[in-house]
Length: 265
Image (cartoon, rainbow, N blue to C red; front, side, top):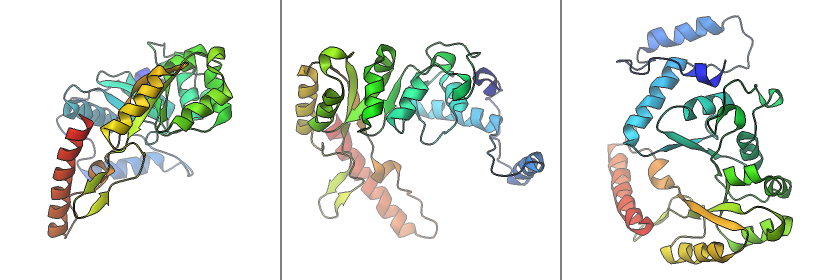
């Protein structure tokens, strides 16, 4: 099935697909009864509904789709074809190069979906979510002007720039797009460090210092900043049977959100 057909559904349904588990799951069980596992099942109505609901909640902010969570290229392309979605956050550089490149039969389909910067001609905006030291993949990126224009590498240290230059000197390649990762964890006054340790760039001054280096260094383009607040986005605040713990988590998240809004701003 093509990406164009994947979400050709009425996503304005009044009731969320799957809202009635007693009817929803037996239907899928019956549909897959003749199949031998392993297999995956995608409910198109649920996908369309969820995509529309995300756009509604985003309130006009473009949504970047994480390929780490959606492992099917056709689904990524179908979601990106919808208003409100823009670009992919990829898991690895080799995956980013595959997504940004043409869609071929060897890569899971043909070019029948057209392009529009997506689909058959590849996805035009792919950010790698983690710094990469894959020299072979960096060499492929540096050897292809279209891929270099479509793929953004994540960095948090000058050493990442040095590695890219060691693989392909600035004068021999197109400019490489890079984004900086801001550490979004919270250093709480009493509790100490809360959140994941994703980057050494914690303060605005540290971020600005590396940004200046990128801006002044030949062969690189500064493309943006990423921050992941794991202590907010990745921590449930409604723990079943633990009202006190849930209230404490919500209080920590409110304080962390306020601190991060000021620091990131």
